[in-house]
Image (cartoon, rainbow, N blue to C red; front, side, top):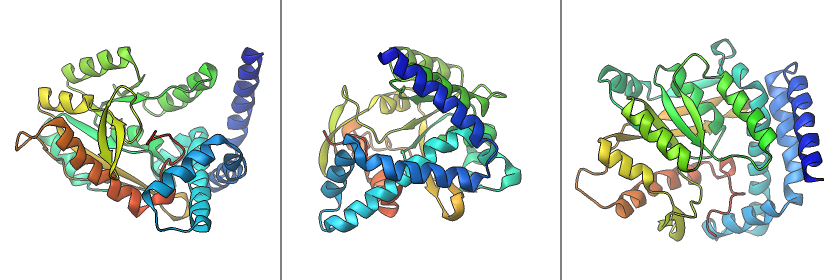
Length: 289
């Protein structure tokens, strides 16, 4: 029965994505946002999102929290549905993506430097990897697989279409991805990670003042291979336009601090992004469990 359900979900999504290709960009985003605003509150993830939000914004009333979480569902829905039109969003003719800090990209290209880009699940994070790749920097990107393997494969295909003319690649989180990322580093590629999700095998590091299981492996890679870290901030702006900010690279090991203290500094950076645009973050994830 589970297999049949997965097949039905898969073929429905294929047909839905195919139809969406004929729609204008704004209508596609609107549909995704509306669908998730209706379905999201009916799921257990809605309770998780509200619980997470209350932990961080303790002075907000319940009505404001519910409104903000609905907006978060809307952003999540837009991001998911926009997988069907990634190439349209990336097409320069459509003028949907604005870049800030491009001079930082030019510097690392000029100096032939490898960096570890880090971002979070905010705005439409699916645009980060292909945008960096189109700027001439090949990266290895780790992603979390979806429970339905058919849909997972479909989404990976959508992602791969946007990077087909480069050495950039996606790899699912796991033992193999660790090997592939190390190989990529040895092959002089850079890497990109979204570092805001829970890593059950990670260490407890303060995030918004709360102990949260956190991945530290990328810091060990940065330390070993002398890679600078570049914060990449994604913001969804009005009318489904996007702003990607490439902040100046940081070398948090200058004073030989340990990984825990280094991660606390990095957390302070992404905390400021979340506070700046809280309704665009992925609150539905069990980050503080």
